[in-house]
Length: 212
Image (cartoon, rainbow, N blue to C red; front, side, top):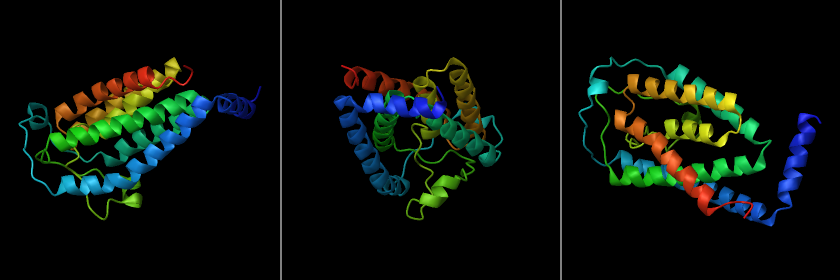
């Protein structure tokens, strides 16, 4: 069976499941709602004052701009993973659901833990953010926890291919190091990201099983 045939068969099979259809549309609605509201939240965060953490790891690192390498890895991994997951509708749905929950947890943590930029920060030049924008505002205080690291680790959890999982894990670790070298996040932001992704992943698997 060709890959295109496998894609179509998998989607037709899952679409017969009413629970899958309901969760699919509900998840997309939540995702769109987050996308429409998050710029207002980040603009609020950017204009409030927070604290500066004393981070021994960052203190030992000379800031270097690694933005092109960082986003080549991030968007390359994300694009390839989404294409791969599209052949597995339930796993793609799981990724969307966990991504939504992780983003909501991240917004809550950012709200509860006001932080100022790490000293020596070199702002990440994100080409995607430049396109969609945050109302023209450069966002640097969305710190605890790292959205890039949490999303990459979420891809590791979601994929069912062992080789791809190892590659994604290596990319996650590399991006985490690049972000620290660039002083974009505190060390605690990076270390906490996989923990929150795992909590969200376990929660969605427990409370929203598609086949139950």
